[in-house]
Length: 63
Image (cartoon, rainbow, N blue to C red; front, top):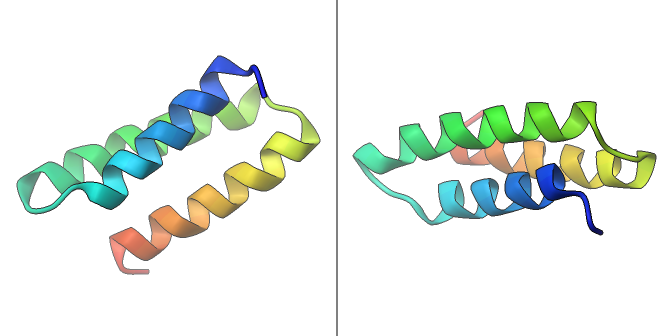
């Protein structure tokens, strides 16, 4: 997939997943913003994947 915003969202969620301590909240915030931007500019298939990334981010946040 060549969507730059999609790729940035994917990387941001991975960073949030791998962050700990004080860095985690900032990484989660960046990932949420990246997901929001990507969702608005994605294909249906990308949106389905972004939903999975959002679920992973929710798990990271403890929801």
